[in-house]
Image (cartoon, rainbow, N blue to C red; front, side, top):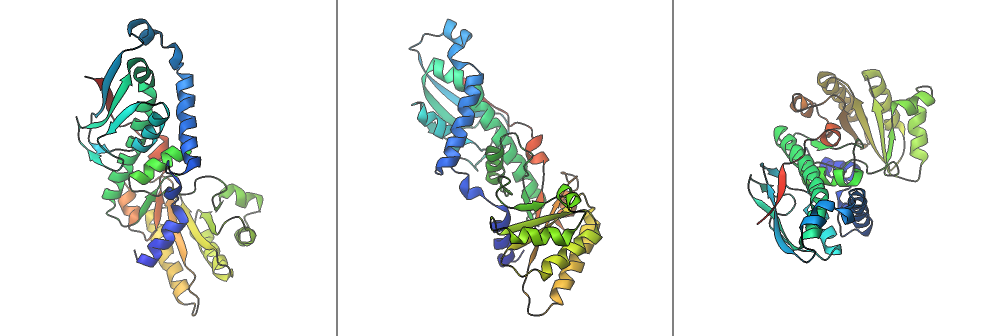
Length: 312
């Protein structure tokens, strides 16, 4: 992929710069989620720990990997531990590939506190590391033919998208206010008028990113011609929804030929593939000419990364 096109793809589909605890909004979001989960767990009424462990007992605990993969969630867990005045030492940072039995983080402090936080902190680390590991493995599988990204099919939207980015994927839009994505139900309410939908989207002053979902060659070519005629500084993308890889490849060639034949016009249309794409067929889709492949299963049904907290 050409460097200029790569820059456009990152502008359109990557918001990872906002997903850092250095960003106050994201930090508050993470702390809110963790505190809500701790409240649900009734950590102040842990009858097992409170019955067995002296309230002043100090311990040293280790979170240890029980499989190989990419670690994610260290930044989020560290930020939380700081708010609770619990000492810790990071052994493996986010993005690092770890091996089974590697120590990820050391935690020191009150035994009751650490044991009451254990399950919630592990849940965050296991989920995020599971997502990051899957994203990383898919990126390796497609050999950088294109980018991969998550979708809004998530349990914890911003945390899940952060995990995708740690694994080398793109975030896609963070929320409904991020960018315009015209889907099939929007088109149904406009009687299937693709040209009208794109014109209305172009009038919005809320975002410079406009994408439209299509499901066949006719809709794709109609969308491409409509985008071509729009005079705008906005960026446009077409999403191929539940379409065969061979069809997508053929259509992209046709669209690129159309764009090339228009002189003195440098408008670029970006391409996304989505729907029914998995580990078995993603390599084929990555070779169609699309810029990004979005994958719901990255976040909605990911397998948790195996790790545990051990006291020594």
